[in-house]
Image 1 (cartoon, rainbow, N blue to C red):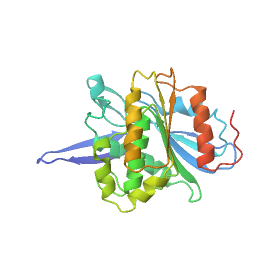
Image 2: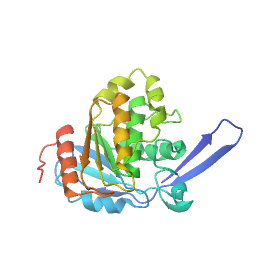
Image 3: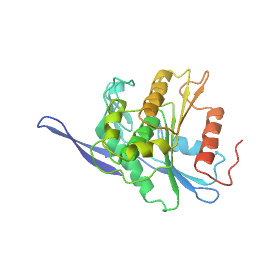
Length: 258
């Protein structure tokens, strides 16, 4: 699936990018379908990597959708092409935000969720850059629009971010102040963030700062979990936490935590 977008700057030049998303992998629910979650992989990965893990989780009531990001040049790697939800040059609070890429990926995720049945709860989760995209999607849901001003079309019942960070954190408060509903929505949206203290790719301080920024912006239903010795990967203790949290916050039945 492709997504065309225009970046309108302050000058007269208009850059145009086309985003060609890769293959989407779906893990069907083994029990009664109660929730659908789009799960987003990290930089350089693909949807199939996570679909294999998600299929093993004791969450029979969840349908997982695992898309693959577009292949594009990434500034962090000197312009090397790899799968990425958006361009990134510096994973920090001071790094520039690729709003065009973020909007394109958030819109792709929303489109995947928009065709789900009306009685199904919807969620977004991800790892690393996928977590960053999930958190950006959460801010779009709360403000009711993407960064480009287009309306955000789906409701979200849960957001999960593992080893990630919050893009556009510097403008979050201003974005939220434009909507009277944003504060009320932010207070109730359940968000789970997990980060390893030993992460040498997305430093723990970035995960901690992201949780702090979200809390200060009014996201009142946020859980932040830390793991001693955990690097930039996931472990059973963390996936157990995700399973229990999703079961509780989505009010799933038929699930059992190991």
